[in-house]
Amino acid sequence: MDLQLTQRNSPLHLDASSPAPASGSGDRVIETDIPARLDGLPWSGFHTRVVLALGITWILDGLEVTLAGTLSGALKESPALRFSNFDVGLANSAYIAGAVIGAIGFGWLTDRIGRRKLFFITLAVYLTATAATAFSWNLASYALFRFLTGAGIGGEYTAINSTIQELVPARYRGWTDLVINGSFWIGAALGAVAAIVLLDPAFIGPDLGWRLAYFSGACLGIVVFVMRFWIPESPRWLMIHGRPDEAHAIVADIERSATGSVQDKPREAWPKIKLRMRSHTPLHEVAHTLLKLYRTRSLVGLSLMTAQAFFYNAIFFTFALVLTDFFGIAYNQVGWYILPFAAGNFLGPLLLGRLFDTLGRRVMIAFTYGTSGVLLALSGYLFSIGVLSAQTQTIAWMVIFFFASPAASAAYLTVSETFPLEVRALAIALFYAIGTGVGGVAGPVLFGALIDTGSRDSVFAGYLLGSALMIAAAVIGWRYGIAAERRPLESVARPLAFVE
Image (cartoon, rainbow, N blue to C red; front, side, top):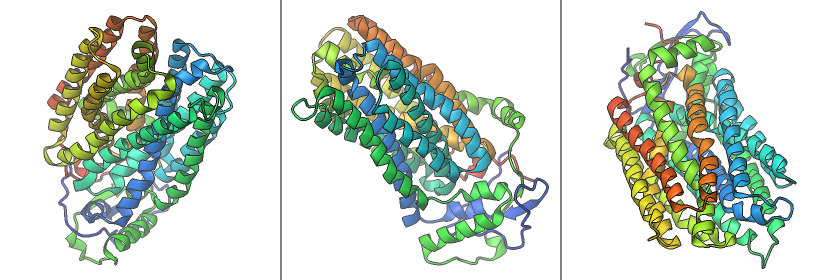
């Protein structure tokens, strides 16, 4: 079933003799070498701009999630809100629920109307909702605005991970995907520093500080909005959706950026594939692809997504609560503890990411998932018997998430590269939604309730559940994962529009 494409070290070009059907045509066939030539490109300034423009979105998400965690103490102290631990967990779960629903809706639109349009729609939703959060007046309004913020971020996950796969050459795909997703933790560090300043009662009152923190996230989003103009539509998406001329023009621009010219190779110099034009992919075909044609891959994607969602959201959203309730750290000092935690999370993908392209996906997924699961169980036990201080607990988390961060990013990498182009964004959305719905929405509420008990053993039980999920995902990834490293996307999963 796999279509093998040979890699060449040259730019891409659409075969000039290929028919140019009208947009939306469903019965015309083109022969194109665009996938092979995109994969054959050297790394260039264009690819660096893609990394910057997409990575900053993850920085925004990191800022959002960190603010939600570090501001929990301020929300409990705010005269206007007076949240309980359960209220904090409920609001964080609302954010995750919004991300789940947003991912599904925007994921469907991403496959139907294109990657680039969704960049601006989802970012606009995020900007508006984040700014509105700053004006929350009670639990209901805060939870609603967090829900809408999550919807924007959920849509970002689908559009961005699709674009990474379709624009970055195959030999760089794993490392690039992991580093972009790992840039979340740069945002986490920024959020931690912002919280330290904005929650300091010597500078700003407790009710104003958390409002300014959210408003700063909206201001940063405006910068991202401008940077989005650097990113073109995916040529791979355009060539299937009846717009080969646009795809050719974009590839020619990328060529000029990468090599200084558009190289006119002989027609036989690049492997070609034949594709039948289509305006969209019916949902029944999506269901057939995910549930029957690639059923095993769906199991792998769902397992990885669920495990990392519970692991991350349960622990990180209640990070501040553990420090304040069990270690007596003042809520306005929590940011100092997040900085080393964020450093470990960013360094993991940065230093281990290359190994996903060399040692391979299956080896590294099993290693990172398994290691982080075992380490969480060990540190959870030490926490339960009371031998850890706030500092040593933070060091333990730093080490655990050095491995868990590339593991979590690998979940998105796996789903986004192992399904056909026509269903890629929706597949990311569905597995993110199901995995996060099962693991992410329940996690913060569960851990909020466990922390409210005041029992270290209860919290340890939650850690053991997260550990078991990660170890199970490691086993599934090793047994059923796909060796997609350095392979063209069309070789890993050929397009549904492929013509023999």
